[in-house]
Amino acid sequence: MPAIMSLQLRQALRTVGAVAALLVGIPVLAAWLPEPGAWVAMSVAVHLAWVGLAVRQLRRAERLER
Image (cartoon, rainbow, N blue to C red):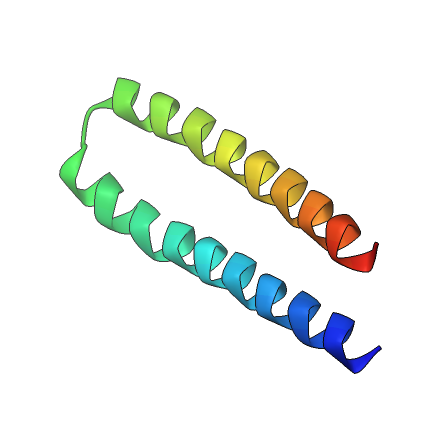
């Protein structure tokens, strides 16, 4: 049991790191892209990244529990 929890914690920390990178990277990227069309594209890309991270976290957590 402690081994599974350790693996899940490591995976969760990786996901938190990816989310933090998105949260820090978005304002930096937004400062470089002042055009309105870039904002739309960036918002769509961010939503896709959120969904991708959530799916990846779910699949990895389920795989670790097996």
